[in-house]
Image (tube, rainbow, N blue to C red):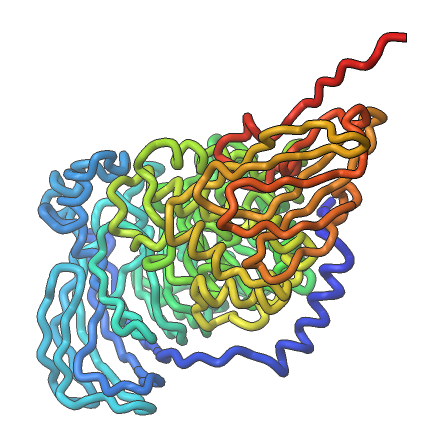
Length: 620
């Protein structure tokens, strides 16, 4: 049975739907509309295609150049991805020197042969994974132009995310496979070379036709338009699919309001599907054998439960389909779909599927910039993975984000931590990138609930969804939503925890009697200030909370359900490294004083968080 966060959250979600209709956030963004027709040769692993791109310049700027991503060009010896992998201190084990050792028929490439804009030739240069285009005419603000392209490509041997013949034998994992117009936003062009990290693109519509050997089954992004011609388990019940003429089939997909398009293909895919009530059709494509049969059968229930939980608590999934596809080199998200490796135990299979599913909300619909701010996408998703796994897979009796906190503490102590504002490709170590963007990012989210209160946090998460879906919010946009809901100033939290590597360390320095009162001395050891929940436990087992918000918060969080009653609130200026609090109880009544027993405060040294009171009582 699926556990819900609370009835209150569901009611608030309904309220926010009404509110958001009147208070939507507006931000310009470019619009793309792709039409692509490609033919795959499964013998040579090469394909040719045409692309028509209607590009609308919704910016206030006049554009004289344009840029396309050509991701497969990274899979060639001495590419930037190859050099980076061979020179970084801790290379990704999936890559290592494998690109350097690829042969001519194993490399990847994408080559543009013809590119026109409104029928006029363009001047363009292949700069490895970026096509640099000089436009024949400027694209004016508000103008829509049409680019027509002819291109050819070769699918690389599977190394990172995309490719052919992966470790589990899947023929084609077709991610980042087409020339993709780079994003242009308030920061200008995002023509970053492909070094191996994440992605960012324009929202738009994709109309894609793929011609391939008729033995292959396809799945991925988009709605299949000709299911009753294709068959392969997509056809309507009771429909007889005519035998294909010739050796190929043309699959026609359409995907609205997405910023990428992935497909996978294998002649041995088993295709199963589950239609959710008031939810999407969920497709499962995998090669059925003794390593997959039982777990993938069970996976269907967990996936459906996870979609339902996310829709109920964080915003309704907006598309009519989602596909879980065996392929790739681990787990990777794409609009409406994911590629995952399938030879896993049940917990691992459910975990990776749920993680990639949650990306549909933060990568897929909100559209966080995975390249410039990877901590947003991966942080929210990693945090959400623990929440959803706890709800639909297995209940954790402990603090469910504890693993993320411990990973962040190791990073903070390692000496290799970098600010989360670092671009994904520019981290000095893969380990610092992983622990930072995934686990410190998740800590950022959980700690927000500590700072602003769980009820405010739940409301803000729904408002974030309703205000910012399909609009590419950034970190500041997230904080502003949290501020609007909570009424607190939270810019300092973003500045300290994201833009710096300063750490949190508070301690209970002393507890001493003062007549009928008790004086508690708290100290800030670390460089980052935070509000404090200080819980006093009395000799009779009862508890009370002393709350110390920061002055710069300009307010306080409400009392939280499950916390001991709040008996005192005193503001703490961040400039002061100590704070004395006088409690109107004799020290003989007190058993202990503890900072944040909920463990949500990312205090890097919890050894000084609790003070056990030792009182020698007079003998009778």
